[in-house]
Amino acid sequence: HRPQHKGACKKRAAELRDEILFKQPESRDLGDCPICCIPLPINALGSTLMACCCKMVCNGCNIANQMREVQDSLENKCPFCRHPAPYNEKETKINLMRRIEVNDPVAMRQMGQFCYDEGDYSGAFEYFSKAAELGNAVAHYLLSVMYHEEKVKMDEKKKMYHSEQAAMGGNPFARKNLANIEWKRGRKLRAVKHGIIGAKLGDDDALKSLKLAYGMGLVSKEDFAAALRGHQAAVDATKSPQREMAETVLE
Image 1 (cartoon, rainbow, N blue to C red):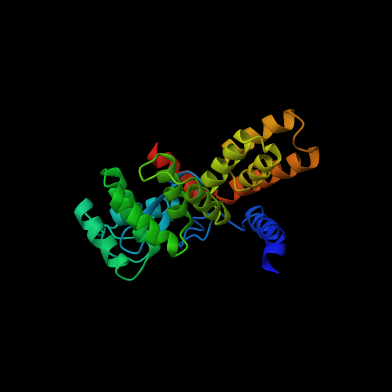
Image 2: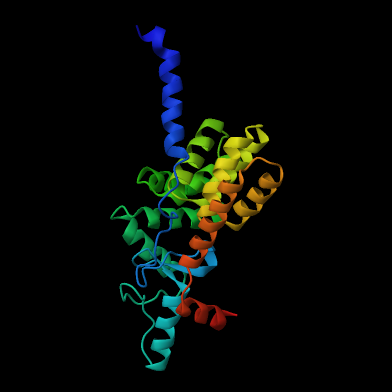
């Protein structure tokens, strides 16, 4: 019985996987700032990871807290958990290890990034893998990058798996990579689907690629218009007067 239906079952499994893969995520992988509750910017420079609690805080909230501390001559503390700010990388890593001990996937991912930057790719792979097992989309994306750059033994299936897991988790960079892969494979309609999802997440590069595809007649007018509206809505959702002030201060 099983051999007779193996092909059909495999096809259906792929169809179900695609249904999940091409479903628009409700939000990007980083979520909202825990203080102002506004979606974090897609640009990594627009927010800061607090090693003490492993919360990503937007620059608007972070700078506002720092300005208050300077004005009132207060000790520099985390704007979320109020833990004293680390003075150096050593203290930062100590804070991260405390979070790792309680299975915080964000701390694992960040420690993996430290290892990666220091050239310790085996250590980075171990931390990224642990974070990915706990569902961290960014860790899945970083693992796909490690496979792509051959920092570990190349495995195309694992590379695609981690790229897809990251994309389904709302990571726009993984979504963009999948679009590029599908385009190179000649599966342009699948690439366009990835591009539409990425654009609606607020990714500028995805929108630019989508414009090219629209010019080639691969995207309908309705889908392109919907992607434009979705992109603008995603970008607008990350804006606030406090963040605009922080940009001015950091210039």
